[in-house]
Amino acid sequence: MMFVALAIGAGAVSFRLNINDAPSVTTPSLPEYKAALWQDSANAYKWADLAEALGDAGREAEAKRAFTRAVALSPQIPMIWVRYTNFCFIHNDLQQGLKTAERVLATVPDYDEILFYYFDRIVENPAAVLAAIGGDRRATRAWLEHMMTANNAVAARNTWSRIADAGFGDDKLAVGYVDYLLRNKRWENALQTWAAWLGERQGDYPARNLLFNGKFQRMPLGGPLDWRLTQSVDEFENVLGKNGAMIRFLGKTNVNYDHLSQVAILPRQGAYRLTMRVKTAGLTTNEGIRLAIPELGLASESLTGSHDWTTVSLDFSVAQSRSLRVGVVRRPSGKFDNKIEGTVWIDGISLGPVGLIGQTITHVY
Image 1 (cartoon, rainbow, N blue to C red):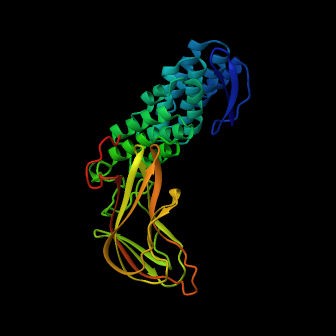
Image 2: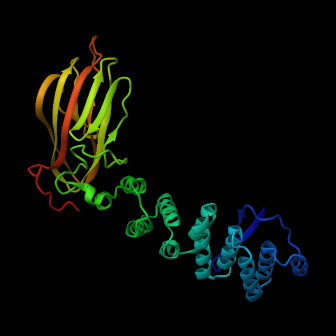
Image 3: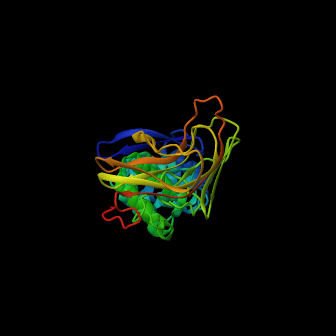
């Protein structure tokens, strides 16, 4: 195990990083390093040891030549490249340090944590890191995760743009980034990012419906800005298909149902309408199905028994742009005979400014 000292800036604030996988070394003199190298001149670790000792002695040009030799002898040893990166940062060669770090990141994920630790403390502008590593899919995705963890919103946005432009993304990463934007209440950015990522899959979202996949014609992609659907259990069955959503209650328990929902972004203040087309068959008990906005304490009247297709709506207002969760719920019944059974079909749920449901919603962004 080797401890590498890393100096930050001209003030030489120092700390020591524990780098694994290097051979255990002491701190011999330069002649001793050279003697060890004379006995095994093809050993990349010994060249790196000598290079670091030369650097510590202020002989930077010789140290760099020694490190060049160490790197040349270690095409399959990323640890040597990490040590060279460390040397470059200590000696203010940012360009070479980033170049060597990119090689490490493009080869193995093992040193992400330590290299990103370097970047956070040495590289003042994260855009320089992105410029260096942005050609590699895995490294760029890892850098986005790191920037989100560090809550650097600007760097995260720039990195996501690079990922989207380069085709490095997937639905899971897009969901993670949008979720990050929502946690930070960046409503407009979240809406724009999700709609752009969906591309041809967006359908009428968000121009005509602020709920994605409002007719349930696609299986959920995961994440808050799509339907969250609990898998079927002993109490009920949830099914999505080309004709909409179906919920079947199996008559076994007094179900507290809140298992079909989506987070919506309301892009501006004002009045909105949430609408559901629903059909029921044989819903027992006095508590049936409702359309609900739990955060606002709003829910429609309970639908029980059997009903042909009908429309249920909730009107509400918000004082500013925000997100909220909408869903289909069933509250537990307080009656003795409270084990619900029956079937619910839903062929669409829409959300938009009052008077614009089914029409183009202007100024969404």
